[in-house]
Image (cartoon, rainbow, N blue to C red; front, side):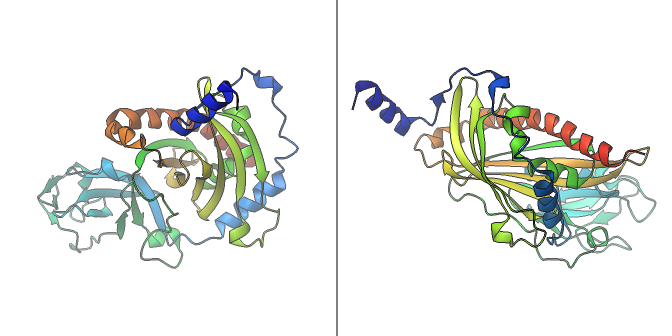
Length: 335
């Protein structure tokens, strides 16, 4: 083995990065022939038939602390807060007395107090006010809205498998004028990655994609992608799979390469409509990173510095991808 090859082998054991050669954006292999609309559309239809149990991700769990927090899902105003034991509580934001916004109330040792007349809410039924089923998975906060979902309810959200062991997570939230399906359709088109996001991805190849078959078995319903994550002139090559465990969630999981087991969960939550009746959708993306490298412990110690960088990277991607999703919505609804 030459000295250079030996050095490369040694570096591969200590760092996941490799130096990327300079290559023009226009020199990439075109992917329009591979990105067949029939494949993307049938994958979307299959995803929309999967059960959700009426659960909606609405916030990062660490944004709900002692103070009550307001949110809207499907036009329904919500208030979320923490009970005395730290559990997540969610209910209608309108006070049943005279309609005050309970998200402007006070959390007194886990009891929510209305700011207008002092009516207290402890997480059980109060007059006509009833709490909604809520779930905190440690990264995201969820609420179950049976009247909105209209499906058979489940006891908990249908969550994808997450990495075991030490992990670092960051949640990003953006809002666009489109429907949740447009967000999912964006991610069911992995072929656009290196073209539309050259600052983040390079050397992207879709290794396999599901057939354009509306009756495809769920275990075969995934995209397998080889891609290199770009950090300036450095790259981290991985193989990832994309799957849809429920109609408003798409998951990218690294199955080989650095950070195997890490996931990016993209949740599309309907908010309601704007003033002209157009739908508004929140993209709530959770990046849950894991690595078996001994140095990963240092990343955990530096979480307060690293997670804002993770959020900024996801925000940049989704600013572009929301423009893509909004374009899909506008084309579909042209008068």
